[in-house]
Image 1: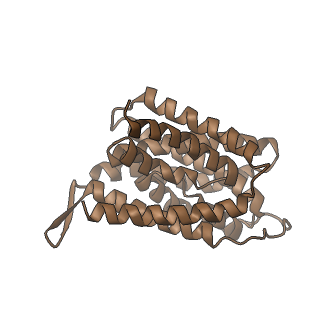
Image 2: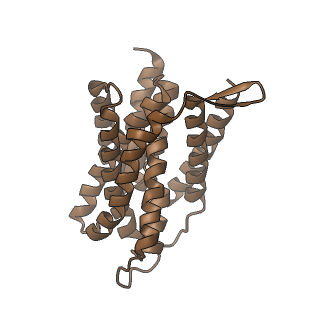
Length: 266
């Protein structure tokens, strides 16, 4: 086993720990880990990431269900357009993207490079969301109200994004639930995990017919990530999650810049 492969499996555990500590964000590292440490093709990496993200988010959602924090009606309303979009993206759109996209000067931008650069941009947006997040949570008052047209549009957009890059999109879903469904922040975070689990796992189904899946590897990686979640939840008793979230946001910012520069300077 090569050192990069060992680091890849260690990183799987770290992804789970981060998810357990700050409730999201860690899964955005899965695609870079698959591509740069485990040398998996970017298209396959985004598919595998959907499975890891889906399983990890589902574990987190079950934990929040026990606490009564998940708003099931909101999850269903948001999930339907999201999982339709992500399934269609993985089943039809991603396979239809040409292998050669365009030239920048004399440099050919391929499908794999395009996906990784787009992923790097999403990492930058996610990092800014973590760095600039408010330190105080809004008051948990008021009834849940739905802006159905905007929720459907947001769900379709998040589903498309998830389908292309394989990330959960929690940094987009949580603000949408707070603003469009008027959910308290704690319920928004908990409900977003169930939405992420549903759309990611259904999106992954769209890949099963399009590619050969290494189930042993995928289940092993996911198991380590899930184990990390329980470690993270335990560590959360001793570590300030909000400060950690900002620090992790800066790390994601650096990673996003690195991915974009690396892909354009190969």
